[in-house]
Image 1 (tube, rainbow, N blue to C red):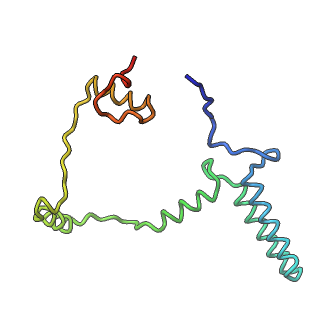
Image 2 (spheres, rainbow, N blue to C red):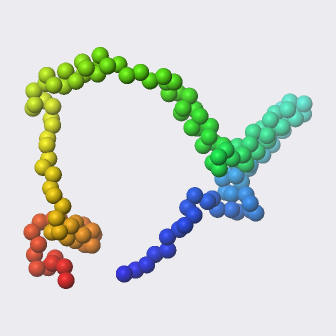
Image 3 (cartoon, rainbow, N blue to C red):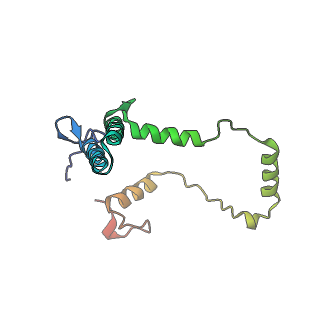
Length: 150
């Protein structure tokens, strides 16, 4: 059986220049580019204000971590949480109406299919392991001599 190396620290970003990761380098590069464009377009007084603001926001987005996660994940989670309603109320009357509507429908409209649960036995486990070992070639039908395990 062939062995593979499994990465241990998949959540650690690759460092390219000292302690700076690829993501941080690209974010700082974009901030410097925006600052350079503002230098070429704006007067010096406006550029000084706008450039300082741009570089400060870039540094915050690139280097600040909250609870060990980059700040852009924190901001995204904050926005998603603020969109949700603060109070969730269970309306019992609406739930009762919904249950009555579902119960009043004929069984054919409900499209409920009950599947018989198969008990797990040694032969079923053998079939499942055979499917896994053969990479899906064995489809679960009757076993022939060519598919019998050794």
